[in-house]
Image (cartoon, rainbow, N blue to C red; front, side):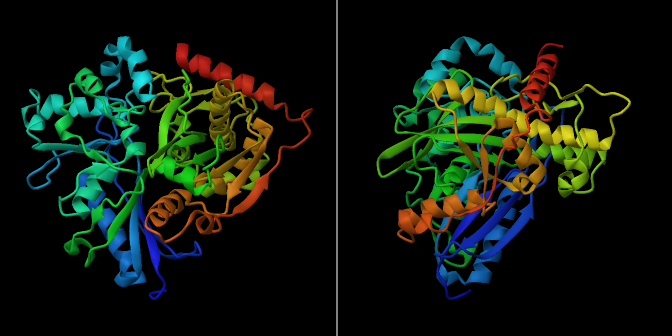
Length: 492
């Protein structure tokens, strides 16, 4: 497909980086993937090597450009794991240390000392003071490498999430920028004024000088350095991964709900141009385009597919994640066994960084299939938790959710989710809706598509409808058992 114009989506994930070239019809012309090493230096700590993060990004980008032809690449869009925090030296671009990943919980103590400011932070940012977000991670790094903040104030050190880091490198150090969906995840960005907030920077002791410029999500961010990509290709869109997924799921209308089942699990609902506030969910910027901002309510869960990976890597009771979707697992009942995967604490709606993973209700009857089934059900229970928190804020009970992400291939999970919620679950025909979404933002912003032609590229794969036999499948009762397991996890 070397003669057909394409948009390349560069998807910077938690476990790997991917580049996908999309044609105007939405078909995939080429793609490449490289895994990304996870480092766990202490319990609760998760890190990446920034050099590896960029090198793998550049590798997949070059591969896809080679497969499609440099002259056919219309533009590049970048989407990324949010909140992950990187600090590097302006001169030479050397990172001061490893990136602190969004899952990392090392700053729980810092967050505890700031709880008196939680209302101010909530009003300005829509966020809850939690180690999940970038500000305390950045403070932790600077306390060690720039304790008096002198270098940061002189702009000798720069901060960015992975989008800013990769953009800075792709442009040969010429562009230090981000956009509102990523900026709104830092606890330093005011989502009402749409600017870095000096009061918040002071609260966290972060010099504003080191922060990236904030452009529109579909801005022309710059062009790639010829040394990187054998040519100057414009970068015309950037968005956080979950916001990109919402865009790719056609989440342009008010309060459409999507759930991404990836390493973590993320529910987002577009609330239009008005930010809705919840004590238990996050208010975030969805995207900003042509001077109009869209907001979203989000429920963020730290352990989705990552808990299945734990069954494989740590317990060795499955060979691949696909083993969790077999007929044997479909026919297994958890029999009162609940798996609360709080390996990195609990996210929405509990926000309990001190919580730890728990398996409850084990009897002599329990076997490997029981634990596998409980891990699958845990993903669905967590989604119901955030849907239950969503309803009182919006006054809306969703009639359906749109689902994407790798774990949606598991039809046991999808059917149990529909049964547990009592609503239709629609699986996207494109599992990589995050990549398609950022391609859409970059493509619409640069004239590759208009809204209607981009919308035509997206379809549905399968709908999962709740079963009617509540006599033999008392899902509300199962959910009550989950809530009891959560209480044990929180208060033991």
